Image (tube, rainbow, N blue to C red):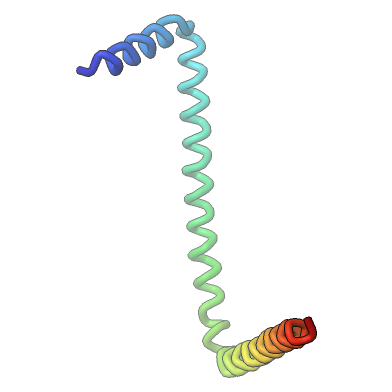
Length: 100
């Protein structure tokens, strides 16, 4: 073992020994409570996600003849506005460069 690792290990052991036993128990209980709560919360979120997907999938299939063309239209309009703005900024930049 490297002497610096041994020294670090010794310091860690001294810190653990200097802490009262009740502090270590409280620390472990807090960690277990927090970990358990997060585990339960992640399980609830997973269950909710599965339920929402189960409900939403048939609705998406039913409304897909409306949603797909609507999304394509919105995408084309957005692309058009962004391209128009980009070309406008490019034109202003070129005109200001020519003017100077």
